[in-house]
Length: 292
Ligand code: UTP
Image (tube, rainbow, N blue to C red; front, side, top):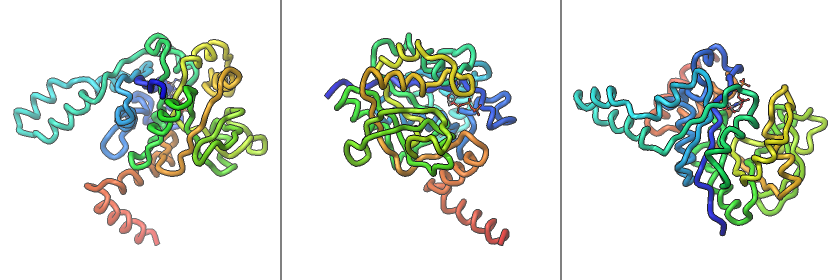
């Protein structure tokens, strides 16, 4: 068993144009899902998987991310003085969550460029990348399985999900061979293919474990789809050097990158909550019955 990664990279420097105007002055990673910003779910997931060193790739208008994971002395003093101990505990637990570091991307030139900005912090270790657009339910974790597969193979691992062929042009897509139930080896990867040209209907979801070799591949990519430096193109180069595996996720993934999916995710996440779910369900049923 090889040493497991300890570091996670969370790219959060994108412009979030699909969620405008909400993202004009606010990072999309800070948009709330029920009562927590999306990026908090992501950091909690990373920490649960044993990744305690977190590097967030930030850019302009991203100060609120740093504030959220920093100590808030003023707020803590107020809560303590007013005996709001439950709230105090919640606030403290956020800043105690992990060792969070930040690096600026400068210009949002694409996801590949964002990951390349992590090079100095990561150095020569394997690491995970988690995208805040994809929320994965704690009931169906995929990252521990990916880390385990890395431990067995010392190769990069991507999270994959089957999607309807009509949707494949929204994702990176892979050609693969099955190794065992839920695990594949990847032979080809393409970014946002037309459905008729897609090699399969397995889409890449926002969780990755990379060997440090990804950095030299990132050095060699040129602007691809949408003029962006695409992580997919670097993975394609990595495939020429070493095997890349895929771990399949079948449920518990919520897309929060577009308005309609964001709404759906909030409803589903709220329904899953023990404290809010039952009351929220009644409200939804009332709304639906009025619609009928
Ligand atoms: P997306 O392409 O989903 O994010 O990238 P975006 O560009 O912000 O969104 P739209 O398409 O304009 O609505 C996935 C993740 O990668 C980050 C984003 O912040 C997001 O979390 N990202 C993307 C960067 O950090 N830098 C980039 O240059 C691009």
